[in-house]
Amino acid sequence: MRAFTYERAKTPAQAAAAVAGTQGAKFLAGGTNLLDLMKLEIETPTHLVDVQDLGLDRIERGTDGGLRIGALVTNSALATDARVRRDYGVLARAIVAGASGQLRNKATTAGNLLQRTRCPYFYDTNQPCNKRRAGSGCAAIGGFSRQLGVIGTSDQCIATYPGDMAVAMRVLDATVETVKADGTTRTIPIADFHRLPGDDPQRDTNIERGELITAVTLPPPLEGVHVYRKVRDRASYAFALVSVAAVIHKDGAGRVAFGGVAPKPWRVEAAEPALREGAKPVAAQMFAGATPRHDNRFKILLAERALASVLAEIKEG
Amino acid sequence: MRDHPDYSLSRRDILVSGAAGIAATSMTEGAAVAGTSRPPDAPPAAAVAFKVNGKARKLSLDTRTTLLDALREHLKLTGTKKGCDHGQCGACTVIVNGQRINSCLSLAVQHEGDAIVTIEGLGTPDKLHPMQAAFIRHDGYQCGYCTPGQICSAVAMLDEIARGVPSHAQVDITANPEATSGEIRERMSGNLCRCGAYSNIAEAVAEIAGSRA
Image 1 (tube, each protein chain N blue to C red):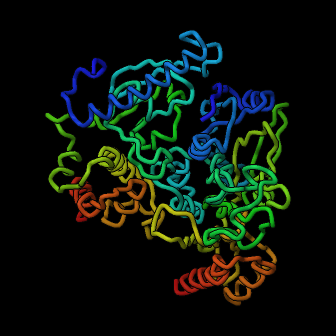
Image 2 (image 1 turned 90 degrees about the vertical axis):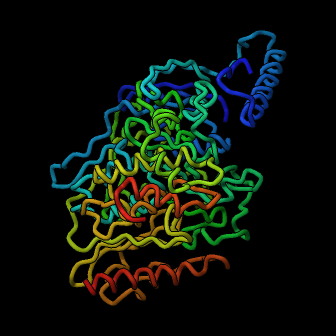
Image 3 (image 1 turned 180 degrees about the horizontal axis):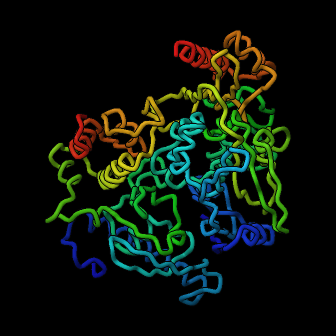
């Protein structure tokens, strides 16, 4: 790990200013992804601004009947909140499908959103990786791609966004609240939060340097059955090959997003009216233009079948 | 061995003295390059104070020091183990402010004012924690390396069930969880055992939870 200086910020604006004003500075929340990458010197911050004292660890009822989740609410605390379990079941289920009990106790809401979009070649510093080092090439393309992206990827990068929580938040139309160093705030729809790699795979999100996430807000609860189905190579503590986040009404209408298939939670609103007709037409629209590799071609059919299974289960009640 | 007067000569002593030897070598090299005991380009250090197993501790550490390394290398609490050092195996699991975490993925300086419990704080050879005794009764280990992490994790995990923290194993996410076999297995998935003692570990945990493995 490279050496770094450390400070604990007292207010969100102060934290944002500290990162914006210090070359090589980064925010530190739970640290479960950042410290892992620092040990491998994939992340090499020279200054860490610890945000744990900012008081952003509460879940509050929004004036519109939704929920405002503080940036530092842990995954465990969020999944345990009675309102989340009752009204946003897809979110509670997605969170407990991710990581391990130990990691969920430390991982925060904002940190979970900001975990790197990544692949095994990103972690292997002996391999070329455009995300790790611009212009060095992509070992994943032509490499072992079973776990990697089939849509939204580019010829620079085929890594997937590995999180579960954000896939549920995408279905729920969450918004991300931030503050910048000058004190200005903005809200970013979750749909626009994560980026596709294009020609710049080093940038995973549309957040700016020194911009601090303060909260994630959920709109009022969505009626319908909330489901998160995760398909993976082992029963627990593994990234998704494919995951399905869905909220489906009695009449078959609803919303769906997939995880494990793209560099961001994958939702195509235009495909959702087809949910009444079953999984096949929905998947056909959602994966139109997909560019799978030999090893991960199965994901498209797996996604369709996982969705079909979810829809069948809901129909049976 | 003067640093470790409590130990009789054992395989552990040899390992410890080997590690100390490496540390001494690198310190010598560092001093030779810089020419002073504290070179001007010394890595940034920070002070941190926390409680470990009820005892107040104050340390000045290289900011890079993980909680795991602070416990093992600085406080000589070597019960907590370093397995993968990347949050994948759970051998480093300790209980911080009542919650289990991977101590390898946390900087010591993040824990100012925290209350940390390690395997040494759960029980002693003369007064075992019930979970430790259950692991012995059920032979819940083979080499024993993952065991301190398994036990810290299991103790905190049962508390999570009691507090209503949900898991992937629940059919109804709104229900209060119960310590069933399926729940225990799912909730312990962050602790790997390369010897494969899982069935005995599950039985030990189930005994303490009052359920069948």
